[in-house]
Length: 434
Ligand SMILES: Nc1ncnc2c1ncn2[C@@H]1O[C@H](COP(=O)(O)OP(=O)(O)OP(=O)(O)O)[C@@H](O)[C@H]1O
Ligand SMILES: [Mg+2]
Image 1 (tube, protein in one colour):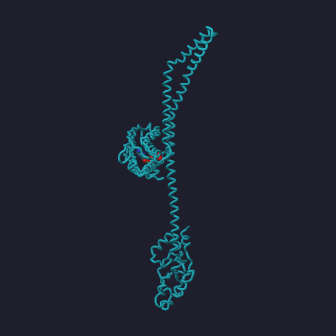
Image 2 (cartoon, helix red, strand yellow):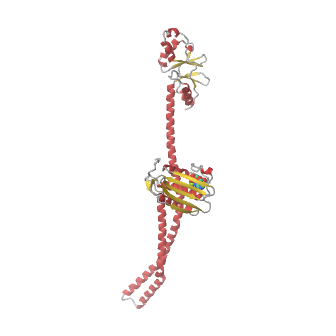
Image 3 (tube, helix red, strand yellow):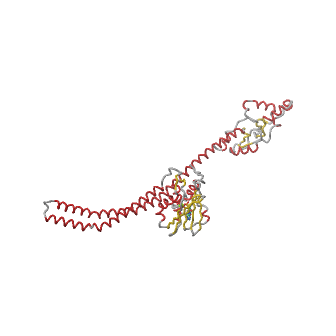
C-alpha cells in the first residue's frame, strides 16, 4: 500500500461549504443523514482552498443560547468557523498523518481533519476515528510480521546451531576415521600373520593324525610307519610350536589391544554425538572433557601436549552433547592458535559458585580489539574457508542457555585462557530456550 492510497481509503467525500452560507443553513446540513458521522464540515474559498471547519459543537453552543438562532442564524458561517483547522496532505503516510493529527488534537474532539491534494486543493474530510482504526490495523499487521520474523529468526538460529554442530562433527569424524585407521591397520596385519603362522600347525596336526592311524592299523607295514613318523617329525620341526607359542601370545595381545582402541573410539564418538534425549541428564563434566579430547585427539596430537588436572565434580543437569560441542570448539581454537608445538592445559574444579572448566593454551593469544569481538557471530581471523566464526558465538549461547558464563583472558604471544562456569543445581536457574 502506498502512502497516498493509505490516506485515500480514509477520505470521505463531503461537499464543502462556502464561507458566506448562513449558520442556519449549515445547521440544517448537519442534520442530514449523509453528514451524521461528521463532527465538523469544511469551508472553502472560491478556489477550493480550505478556509476552516465549522464544528457541530460550536453551532450547538450558539443555538443553546437564548435567542441564539434568531440573533445569529442568518450570520455567515465564516464568522464562527475555526480558521486554523487540521489540514493533512493526501500524500502523507498514515504515520505522518496520525502524528500531525494527534499533535494538534484537543479534548474533547470536536473536529475532523481536512485532506488536501498536492496543490493545496480541498479533497475531502477524514475522521479521527477512521485514522485510529487504520493505525491499529497497521500496528496489528506490523506485529504479525514481527512475530513471524521472530519465529524465522529462532528457526534459523536453531539451524545455525545444528549446522555448526554438523560441521564440527564432520571435521572430527575425519579425524576419528584417521585414528581408527592405525589400530585397524595393525589388527589386520596381525590377523593375516596369525593365519600364516597357524598353517604349519594344521599340517602338523594332519601329519600326527596320519601317524596315529598307522599305529592303530595292524596292516600298516614298517616302511609306512617309518615314513609317517618322519613326516610327523618334519611337520613338528616346521611348525616349531614351542617357539610359536610366544609369538602367538604377543600377536593375540596386540590384536586385542587394537580392538579395544577401536572400541574406545567408537564409544567416544557415540557419546560425543549422542542426541539430547533429556536436556537435563545428570552428567559428570569430566566425562565431557574426556569425550571431547578423544574426538579432538587427531586434531591436537601434533600441535600440543594436553595436560589434564581434573578435580572431582558433582554431577549436574545439562545437555551433554552441547557441552561437548563447546569443549570441542575451545580445543580446536586452542590447537589452531598454536604455531609449532605447544601445550593445552585443562583444569576442572567445583566451588560454591558452580563448576568451572578452564582451557588454557600457550598459543598466539589475541590483542584486545580481537578479543572484544570473538563472541560475535561470523567474526573470524582465519582465512576464508577455514573459519566460519561461529564456534565461539554458538558456544556462548549454549553456556548462557545453561545459566552459565564463558570468560576469556588473553595476551598476544603468551596464550589464551577460556573459563566456562556452570551453576550448581541449587543456584541454577535453568533458563533454557526450548
Ligand atoms: N584460543 C585462542 N587463541 C587465539 N585466538 C582465538 C582463540 N580462540 C578464538 N580465537 C579468535 O577468535 C576468533 C573467533 O573464534 P570462533 O571459534 O568463533 O571462530 P573461528 O575459529 O574463526 O571459526 P570456526 O570456529 O567456525 O572454525 C578466531 O578467529 C580467533 O581469532
Ligand atoms: Mg573456532
